[in-house]
Image (cartoon, rainbow, N blue to C red; front, side, top):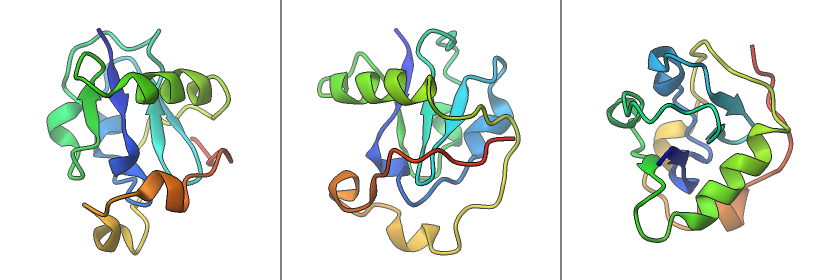
Length: 112
């Protein structure tokens, strides 16, 4: 098992999760974060830290697509180990439906 970041992170990117991750397995895209499933040690400390509830175990039904997305983009995006400020409009997008189709971009973020 590993944890995955879902589309609930898109346009929110609160980054509380990166502060608690003991193995620094988060990677930053322009609009969201992902977890490298090969680096994640399944400790689960990141899950309760996410205000958007975007981090879930990959064993939950329907998370197969997020496991694939996390695996793909964690190999392309830069590592992020320090919390940055969330986007100014993050709270406006928290809980919004359909964010992947509306806002996802494969562009990399800045990382550390």
